[in-house]
Amino acid sequence: MKLSLVDLSTVIPGQTRHQTLMNSIEVAQHIERLGFERVWYAEHHGSASIAGRAPEIMIAAVAAKTSTIKVGSGSVLLNHYSPFKVVETFCTLNELYPNRIDMGIGRATTGPTTDFALQQDRSKQFQSDSNQQILELTAWLDNSFPKDHPFAKTRIHTIDSLPELHLLGSSSWSASAASHLGLRYVFAGFINQKGTPDIINSYRSNFKPSDTPSGIKSPQVSLAVHVVCADTEEEAHRQTAPVRVMYRSLAKGIIDTPLLSPDDAVKELGGLPTIGEYVSGSGIPPRFIAGTPEQVHQQLIQLGKDLSVDEIIIQDMMTDHEARLRSYELLSSVFELK
Image (cartoon, rainbow, N blue to C red; front, side, top):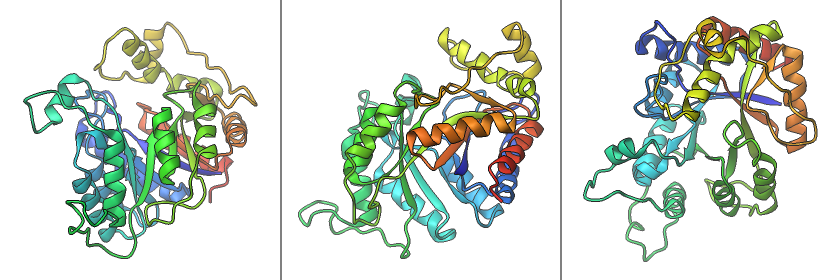
């Protein structure tokens, strides 16, 4: 099984945002040495706890400091941008670092105020057409606009290879779009746990092979889950405490608060959090998969088998940098990535 990472560039208490981004570069170099397949950078706006807001810039910085690991976005929120500009940006990245760039595309609201701030036309609240945008994006990549289309005479001039396109999502819309266009699909199991098996099965059963440069001939699905690995089960559970506090705050409508240290988060929770394990055969990932290397390996292997996925993309949002590095070391060893 392949392992990859989506890095949100979590701001650690007491550290600057500059140090947070330097940590992200160090993490990428670390997991490259450990045999991880790819590292992606997220897009979050107006966040006190997440420094990752411009994945294209992080891709350029990290690709320059690494040599073999694939680097990409997880994801660019296409509903806020011009597909033409997104494709040109990623083709430029791919020209700088050929055959290493992933273009992860998704859609999401960032909140009404930031959504509005991202618009150029402020005369009214804009509602994007997701179907039209993904069709336009693939047409730019494939240079496949119909002859009578206004964009038909404009081409994306680039090298022979293209950035590798992945459609990310946690809903039936994303699965439907990916299957009908013959695209790689990444399902956010940490967002929609219960919907995971049905939506992934829908993608596979409705998949239409694509001969286009941006598409693929057979279904390819990866699963993104929240994973923490440590030398002891207790330590792994302790490291999940900060994000558990964050989720609890979100449930109360408190949107933007800094993440706590593991110790402060445990105090806030009133004790060490307990975490349920994956139920074999269900295809429904728990919100957290955390434990010793053997515990995590067993759960991820069974989850991958039940869903027929061969790549797990890890998210963790840990606020202890050294514990993050150790988590990846343990995962690499138990999965024999090197």
